Image 1: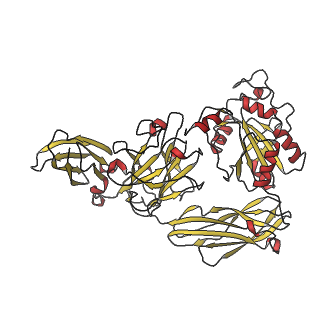
Image 2: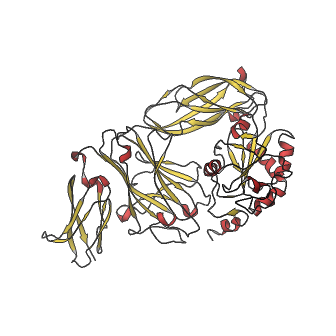
Image 3: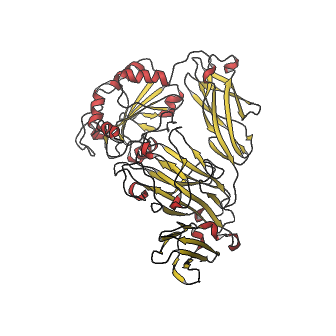
Length: 554
């Protein structure tokens, strides 16, 4: 019964992919599109003027989109609450299919990308935009457009709420609930904390907050108060000119802190030099960690707490996220980091395991290795894992690994909640040589929920080489299972070990089997034909050697 609800819902939309959306409360990405009358429309310009914006992302060939368009729900909302009415809101219709040309908008000759359901512009009072492929493709990515129609209501503070195919009354009620009108003439508040958010690198950072005018009178000044933990609050005199519902980013003076977890609090006071008429919306709080760039290796086996000093968890929607859970990778440990995609019904949500920054300034090679286990629920539900790297403390990220669906899976499809066996893990290695010389290299694992099946990550190792003497090879080699019933796996975690020779001997020194590998990963040895007892696994590389006992007990 797990997937029945979503399958039933799918019939109401035009879609060929799994559902996804911006979580309610997300910050709306800005865009500028030109409508069919050659008028330009910028989202943030409307929002900064205090207007609520409803966007309808549809396709001219989509029958449910056409039915909703002809229901006149958006037209009535626009006429009552848009520029022709109370002027509280704006409506923008956006063609989401990059293959649609302008004749399709009017069902005219020369239409490509159709067939069109009809003349979409006839009698439509609000802007109708058909962006170019170069514009709509990044827009669709930014707004997680996976089906048509997708609709969002965006408040002046830039927060989004999903409102697919709402009636005029539902749109109005949602606008009043999510973007409430002023209750006081003077009412300033902090609507968002831009920085710190998640991490800061080092022991100082520059905070930024969004000041919003929640009042009915123009806001020209207020005091922004801000503090870290229970330290004395600092003050910043903000000045500007904000209409009702409008907002502006305030960049505050640099703040000093200490390495570790902290809370940043910011609140407003003294709007226009007077008392605030509604203090309930004054304050926002952000939890963050101050991290220092460390020297590799960074090792996380998820045997202690999660989050830990070497692995933090970011959970943007405060819902399902990574937790410590059995089993460990390849059966060699007790726990791993698990995300429960099986019960995570809100698709498109992203969660993160974040590795603190490392110093690769003097490294000659570097690699990130980890073990992963995942099964699909079926081909219909696609979960995704990305690994991204940042050299500016998380301000920007570069993708270095992406797998999803059957490529990510390490086990057959499973309609029950997936728990991996020792043989249902895969070792992954990511070469970080392009980041050598960088003093601060941060990595994170990013999962995108497709409501599929569980994913596990374990044995995270970020290693570098600055010289042969820096390598303790035992830190990069796992031998399992131990005891073994026949098969013995030798997992090489670090690509920078180079060529590796592995041999297994008995207690008399006789070589039972041996192999060589030039890449990180698993090597499998079959001892099922040998007698029960103790054996020795010897691993040698140019950077060192190690020997480990393994017990054969068939």
